[in-house]
Image (cartoon, rainbow, N blue to C red; front, side, top):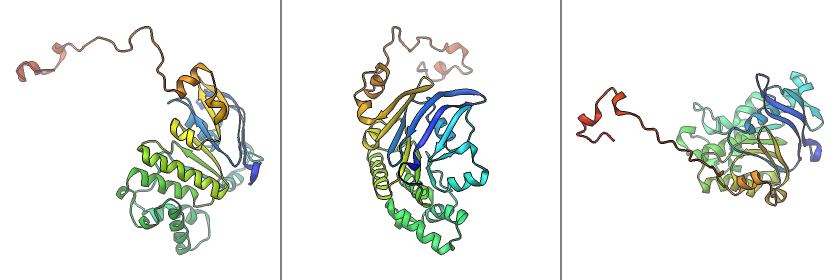
Amino acid sequence: MSGHKHDIRLTGLSVGYGGKAVVSDVNVTLPGGKITVILGGSGCGKSTLLKHILRLHDPIAGAIHIGRHNIMELSRKQWACLKLRLGLLFQDGALLGSLTLGDNVALPLREHTRLKPRQAQEIAVAKLGLVGLENFAHLYPNQLSGGMRKRAGLARAMVMDPAILFCDEPTSGLDPINSAELDQLLLELKQRFDMTLVVVSHDLASMRTIADHVVVLGEGRVLFDGSLEELEATRDTYLRRFLDRLAEERDTPRLGTAQLDPSVMKMDCSRLLGGEAR
């Protein structure tokens, strides 16, 4: 899988659960060798789409091609082989708390290769070095900050040298400095290893830093598919509100005025607190 061979093509794709579509009629190509950011508001179907690309669920309709492979037509063994070329950074890092960072990162090597434990550990420490954590291999996840756990999760996602790296909300829960550092790491990894990256995010600052290509989801469909420059130039009303962080105008106040009647309370807090119930 090299060059344009690891494009990801979604054709007539509808995804969802229980036969009910969350996103319908997706026809996009996530270009090989580029960073594609799948952008959109909470609940728009970003993570649902990612789960279907990773074949965690079957689509309602349509096809998913990774390189020349229609993944839904692959046998279990063929899919298992293709998965070895894919890396996934989970939103929360998904590290095992009972294992050290070194053992967490080495785990895929021990599961899928014939490497000796010492060799696997050496490679794991080297991958931790890519994210600046080689001196922390002996520590456990609960001994690290959130940003360090994200970087360790990235090292594990990279340990099998994937051709395609998927990242689910990589900057979620991180402060601006750690977010910027993780963005820079993704850019460096893409350049160094000539990888394809697919990043699910609602982080506009991150998108503007790393994206070559952007797909925006909303209203159950694809609202935009193109380059970052084309997205920034859009005059579409919804996309401009999203990009410029503008609240939707409303004719009536969103907040109601109803208040809880103190008489329904089980305790008379006003009496107990000397009239200072609120």
